[in-house]
Each structure stands twice: as C-alpha cells, then as structure tokens.
Length: 358
Image (tube, rainbow, N blue to C red; front, side, top):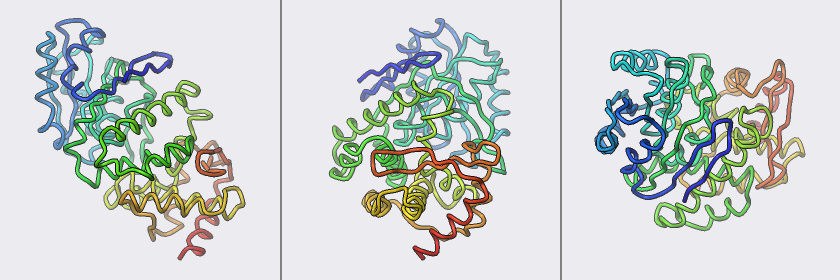
C-alpha cells in the first residue's frame, strides 16, 4: 500500500512487508548518490535492524553511519540531541545528506528534531518499528524532545521525505509495547471512525496479520487526512490529542517511568470521557465502552495519581492558548470536538471524575 500525504512538502508512505530492505533503493530516488546517511536508533532496535538498514544504504552507494542511544523516554532530551549533532558534525554531513529514524516514537521524535535543526534543516526518512510509531508518530512532521517541565515542549514541524512502514518489524515487539500502540489505534477509532473501533474490538490483531495491516493502513490514512487539513496543529489536528492532555500529565507525574505512552493515553481517554459525560457533552456509557476495549487490549484504565499533580502538569499542555486549555472530547465514539475551558477549571473536573469513580 502506498499513500501520498499532501503537506507543504509532500511525501510518500509505503506500507509493505519487507520494505526495510528497500531503504537504499528508495533513498536513491530522494538524495544524491554517494551522500552520507546517519541512522539514529536506540539500544533495543539497533541490534535488530541497524545492520540491515546500513547494508541497504551501502548497496545503493550511500555512506551510512549509526548513532545509538539508550532505549527509553529518559533519553528524549536535549543532551542526547547535542550528541547527535556532534556525531553528524564529525562525519562532516552537509545539507544534501540525510538522517534515517529507525525505531519507535522516541527515536522518530528525536531524529526528526535533529534533522529539523542541524544545519538549519536536512532531510530524513522515518522507518518506524513499533506499532505506535507506525500508526501515529512517524506521520505528520511533529518532532521534539522533553523538558523536566513536560513532554515535547521543545520541537519543530519538519516533514520526513519518506515513511517506510514494515509490519514485519512488529514480530520483535514485546507484548507490552504492542498493546502500547493499540491505545493510539483505539484513539483513532474514538475520534474519527466507529468502524475502525469495531474492527479492533472484533479481532485479535496480534494473531491476524492481514487485519493488522488493514488497521495500520486505516490509522495512517486517518492521520494523513487530518494532517493535510491542518498541518501545523491549529484546528482539526488537535483532535489527534484525545486522551493526551491527561496522558502526558500522567507520564510527567511518574517521571516517564511507570507508564508507557499508550498506557497513559488510554487512562487519559477514559478519564476525559467520564468528564465529558459528567458535563453532559458525551453520550453516557462511552467511557465504559472505551475502557472495555482497552482492557481487551491488555491496557490499564485506572490510576490514582493526585488530581492536583495532573492539573499542574496539564497546565503546560501545548494545546493551551493563554489562559485557555483545549480539551478533546467525544460526542460519541467516532465523533470528537475541541472544548476550550479556562485552565483553572481543569482541577475541579479531575477531582469530580476521581470522586465519582473511586
């Protein structure tokens, strides 16, 4: 399957088993022959796929190098990016060279940010190897790193030149991180497509590869349509952050240690839907229907983090504008909307949700 995303810099998304080995061939259509390529990957993915990626590039006439960082969200910081810059400078990379982001969401976010800022911008290719990255973070051009004050607070919009999605790489993904990606897939069903929600509900995607590929394609196509309409996240694209305001707050509360991104977002979706139901803005029973599918997907739906901590972290949310916080709510599954509130109203909403579902 091939999709083209029509952003300010259009690019192709190739979804095909085995396409990792086509990296060099595909790069040859985008970058000058004989150029340098920096593969950025983490300590988990690098041992599995970096050699294959480098060999494919070398066969196509490129000069590859590999930068490996310790796996985990704790590496997603400016100090890691500084080491990436140093490695690329030592290789004397120029604006005609490129980066390959090989890994999950952390890798893609950091490699994309390095590409956006090194020499004021060079090209990069996304090769997502986690389910979460394949269906969500590798598409759309959002890049960035975390600060102690919050997640993704430093970043840039920088579209990749190409996205290669190889579902075969999911075979090495631990079950917890497969579930992590399912949270984002469920999110797409919640905000845009009741049929996608039901496809996930009615199939065991870990055992049905053809249905899994269909789900990946539908999620990517949904992201494509939203990004084409709102590339720079000022309107409809905010809908993609359903569950993320409280999800990011949970991640920060636990110092990015206890919960994966998908686990936190899943809990955030349930909490915000309960709040929507309490405000008579969301169809009754929606939160429990989402919670049931999250549990089916081996994801948590509850957490006891203090309301005050979540509200404080959420106040730094990037969807905020001045004193207003843009919550993403559902009318019902498949229909989402932006609901602006004054930031000071979030704490009472969280407290009420916790009290009613203690």
